[in-house]
Image 1 (tube, rainbow, N blue to C red):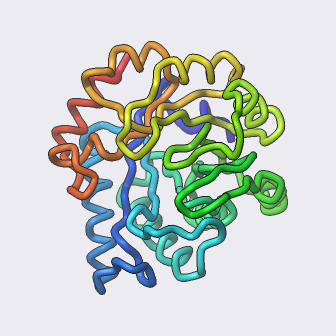
Image 2 (image 1 turned 30 degrees about the horizontal axis):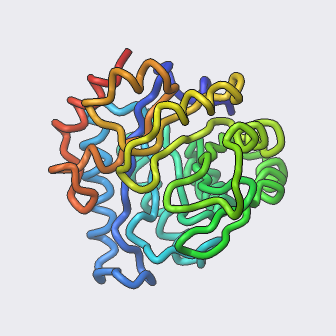
Length: 265
């Protein structure tokens, strides 16, 4: 499935549903129904505010597993994705299983009807707060083919909260992601959650991405919206949609509506 087949908007704005800590994670509060309720409420505020798509991710599960997550994470994220999708069946849905479990994200997408997944490190290797994480494109793409899953793969370029093992040229990384890892979309971000994305990085990525869309993955704000919408092909927004712009707060529908309006061409 191509990105153009998923979104009706030429430059989609995607809202992130940050799941509260799940059962088994250190900060789990003891009530999974409350986790679901918060996810449904945030998704509702995002859709009411005008986003073009949603991404469900296990943001509250830090510290994250570097690779494959345990079964209870997969099952809970599946339940959460079904709950969100049942409320908003016409809104494109994506999954991001942190820190880098693309295979589980693919399985959840297949089970829930989600159209795309985000993979933080699809190819290459990065030093992260989870240690060294290696890309798993060879397994993920074969699994997608084996399952016949019509699910797009959106890959981060020099993903946030990480550093390269050695000096690396972004142009080569983008070329590898597009032509060797076969990413369906690329995501360029700042250094961390909510951090501003460098415009030059977006331009460099687009120079080598060809027809593959390049999205902004962090730090989107109304102040920089005019410049971003001239360069980027889409936007993933989490923190800026929250009350007071704090990642720990619930989604604020009015903030969503205001920023989505600023990002429209």
